Amino acid sequence: MAATGQTTGSAGRATGSAGRATGSAGRATGSAGRRSKLVGRLGRFVGTPFGFAVLGCLVLAGWALWSGGILDNAIARDVRSSAVYAAPGVDLDEAAAERIIGNRRLVVVILEPGASLRDGCDDVKSAADGTVVLLLARDGDEFDRYGCALLPERDDENFGRAFVAESIIGRGVDGFVDDPLAAMKVIAVNYDLLVRAGTVPDGARSISPSLPRFLVAVAAVCAVVVGATVAWVGARRAGRLAANRQARREAAADRRSELAAATAVLAQQIMDLDRRFGTLPATVSRAVEFRQLAADYAGLLDDLTTRDGDPSDADLDRLSTHVEELTTRCRHLHTSAP
Image (cartoon, rainbow, N blue to C red; front, side, top):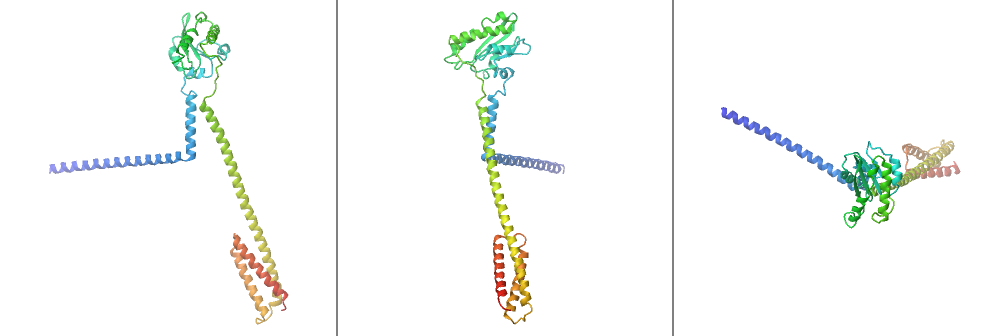
C-alpha cells in the first residue's frame, strides 16, 4: 500500500510538472505570436511611403547628431567651432586669444597641469580635422607640449610634413608660462612660418555645418512645402466639392419651390373648375373628366407628401411632368363649355 501511495504521489507530481511545462510552452507561444504580430505591423508601416519617409528622417537625424558631435567631450565640443580651449582654472582671456589666432587653421588647447595631452589629441581628431593642434599643460616653470597635426593624408604622403609641424608649432612658448596671450602670439608666428615654408597648406579655417544637417534642413523645407501644397490642394478640392454640393442643394431647393408654386396654381385652377363642373350630373362627360382630374390631383398630393423629405432629381422630374400634365388638362376643361 505504501508503495502504491508513493507511486500515486510521484505520478501526481509528474502530472503537475507536465502541466506547468505546458503552461510555460503556451506563454512562450503567446509571446512569440505577439512579437511576430508586432514585427509584421512594423514591416507594413515601414513599407508605406509615410513609414519610409519617417525611417529616412530618423536615419538623417541620427547621422546629423553623430557627425555634429553628440558624443564629443567638452574639449571637442569647444574646438569644433573655436580655435582656443582653456580648461577650468586656467587663467586665459579666450576672446583675446581667439583674436590672436584669427582664422588660421590652428587650434590651441590649454589643459590643467598633469593632464594627458596624448588623450586630448585623440579627443579632437574629428572636431579639429584639417588643422594643426597644439596641446599645452603647465609643468612648473615651462609648458608640457604635444603637437597634433591633423593634416590631410597625414599618415601617408604628408607624414613628414605633419611630423615637422608638430615639432615646430610649440617652439618658444616655455618663456611665457605666466603670460598665455604672449604664448599665443608665439604659436601664431610659428604657424605662419610653417605656412611660408609650405609645410602646412595655406588658407583659412572654415567652420560649416555637417552634410547631414544640410540634408535635414532640406528635408524639413521640402516637408513644409510639400505639406503646404498637399493641404492647399486638399482644401481646394474639398472647397470645390462643397461648392458643388451647395449648388446642387440650391438647385434642388429652387426646383422644389417651382414645383410647390406650380402645385398651388394647379390647386387654384381646380377650385375654379369645381364651381363650374362640381354640380353637374355624373353622367356629363365634362363632369366625369373633372372628377378624374380631381382624383389625379389628390394622388399628386399624396406623392408630394411622400417625397417631401429629400426628393431625388428623378422624382422632381416626374412630379414636375405630372403637374404640367394636370395643368394642361385644367386649361382644356377651362376652355371647354360646361
